[in-house]
Length: 377
Image 1 (spheres, rainbow, N blue to C red):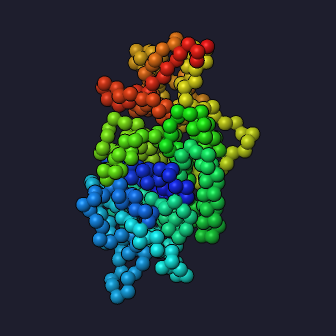
Image 2: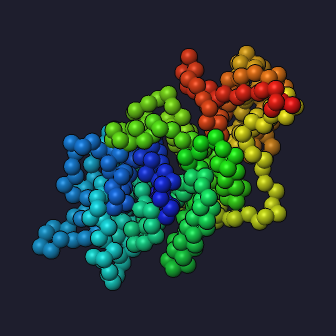
Image 3: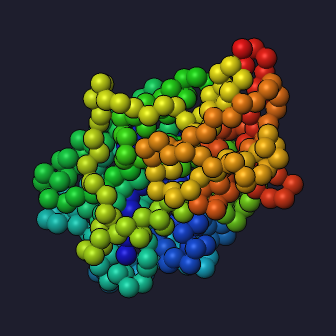
């Protein structure tokens, strides 16, 4: 059973949306998933359950025993959302847990102990953490062997990651518990040079410790959550569907690399690279003197191709060349508007760093590239 905490003490970076939609896509791939809501705001619960469903018991009862009543165990609060996907709900009462358990020995291990009996029931446990560092977050981190850190391309993003890494360091020093950490760029608009620069900084500073997938901004993600439905069951033709499907595929690919002890066979430390390190180039298509440099970060891929209306969607000559973990291809293009997509190990996908997409008549989304006279010059 893989246990993954979705954590960042900075709010508004897409933790809950990531928790919901990653869980839903893993469930679609026939993995048994339990999504644990550890945020007193209860947004994961709201984003999966309709208004007609009111949980009678929540994670608060798992942490705090009511005098004179039978102790509540995790199994008592779990609700089935859809096939292969269950949720352990939360509400505002959860915010009272730190005060209720003040001074109690072993209070940091309550969630870990609660999950022990589920080793054979689920393939994945995803824990949505609160936007703070405290008892609830420490419970989640001690219960998990992996962490996904959603990072929005904002001014405070890298500073927030640094503070979070301090939390992981304290956890390891105090308890010896080690966590494999990967950053995930979320809410990527790509419309401004600032957003692109921050996203590049995140990949540079966390080189080798981030997901290749980038979650682009999509209003459909918020719409789906407001209806209590994951994007996987709400809107197939949008970048939110495509990106979270790609993230789930990337998580599933790590299954093959799992060590015998159940940990992910990747280095656990998140290393901030020095200012003098050799960083990869930005990955969005670059246009110089009528040449377009297509590039996509796919270090685990065996083959990557780029196809579009510029080559009549022809496989011949579409192969890209690997440069480290980045695949590149230079194409000479006259000014014009072009559709294109990448094929990563026979899986079609739009450009994860290009927010301009249009539906393809035969399914999926095409990325759009415009080469104008001024840019080509």
